[in-house]
Image (tube, rainbow, N blue to C red; front, side, top):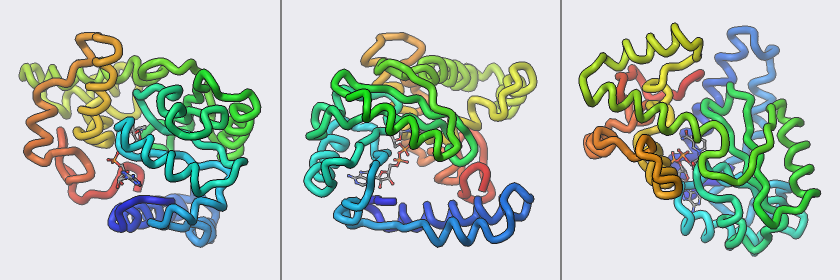
Length: 260
Ligand SMILES: NC(=O)c1ccc[n+]([C@@H]2O[C@H](COP(=O)([O-])OP(=O)(O)OC[C@H]3O[C@@H](n4cnc5c(N)ncnc54)[C@H](O)[C@@H]3O)[C@@H](O)[C@H]2O)c1
């Protein structure tokens, strides 16, 4: 795992450890599996370390310029065979690939939160992605025990095409004072059978990321329900980003991620 910030790496390591140990305690992993997995975990702030990777999955800020800068640096470091993948939720795979130096070996791999529990990966080829690249990335997703689903390179792919407007509707219910966040989540979970309510999910996504997702989706589709609700901006100003700051629509006793 590579991150520009050491504190982000430390947090990722701690959350991974907590999740794996809890899974072991609950009998979902055999005894000793957590220690084995953690022994394979490597964190680095040195980009050159990624030269050994067959595939690099990027998940930096939802910003095309930041992603292009990172991929240009990676292209100088990684060998020809390395596939580049992006976890972007809303930016075009073809556009990111265009600034990566290797658009033929580039693919969209959109994981679904909480990624340690959810199986879905939306797999999108860019216009220049070679069939061989797509097949190798698909096989890698299956080897991780995930469930890949093919989708074209369109705004929000399948999941966020539904989820961004849907989650914004839940935020607008809070803005209008229609119901308390806990009751909105309870209604959706009870009636639709979702494991998490939309406001619980938004707390996990983070208001800062939700704002970027809305701006990207609304800018591309002009769908009014995708526009960022003003409450999201106020919550960002108040540092109520969600679970990562301990408070969003709900208040958390600690800042551990879901499932940890
Ligand atoms: N939050 C979600 O629900 C979710 C779900 C699926 C996909 N995504 C996608 O994942 C990506 C990241 O979103 P997030 O919510 O995790 O954002 P985040 O802000 O929580 O985390 C981004 C991380 O990237 C690091 N970073 C930024 N620039 C970097 C660089 N140049 N080099 C190395 N590290 C860098 C930051 O230090 C930070 O740790 C986005 O493309 C987003 O669309 C997010």
